[in-house]
Image (tube, rainbow, N blue to C red):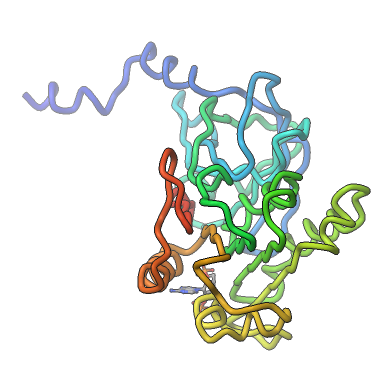
Length: 276
Ligand code: A2P
């Protein structure tokens, strides 16, 4: 009996191979450490790997012949030749404790089936798109702000990034700086995109939690825009589960409906988020 019960924990080599077959093997092209808690990396991209900006896939490492993977949003846009990911580092995290040591030339497993709710077709038409993230939840929005379509569909885009410390904003600053010097996106950004970084545990020009800043109206008044309004605003959320839950309650009180694949709404939440 003991043997039978234990059997599923010991997959046969065949089963292990089958599950590894769900992944492409990609090569790490570059790794950049932003703080002691955050890093980003780029990898090669299989020519058959297609995704929509804002989606995620399972990525990770082969450990003892099996895939050790977690959900990661692509931080790169779907027309780029490479893939980019933005990750937390947790000392005892099963995957991130290993992933944080990757170097150029290492192999990464990238799931062949991207998915996720943060795509513009899951939103009802509106005029302002508010992208709210904390920590590594910025990743899908790093992809979306490089999508020309969001600038066609929305008159204004607001990218909000809440972190503990100023240093944790550095990846986002880097993404935005890259966009501002891009031939196409530079002018789109100047016309339509407002970036609002905020920190909660240090002195900075913007301080406070994203929830409080949006509820109080301070965030919108700081950027010279109208307060939250269900008639015009469409919102995407990615990051801390506590932040996402608080926003869900806030939005439901204000008659925003939650959308998902197949049923567009006023706001969208990405539940797949790595915090270990
Ligand atoms: P705080 O410093 O007040 O906890 P983390 O690094 O833990 O994922 O947090 C990223 C950011 O998300 C921090 O600024 C943190 O603020 C903030 N945060 C945590 N919980 C919530 C919440 N319920 N609503 C809004 N922001 C939150």
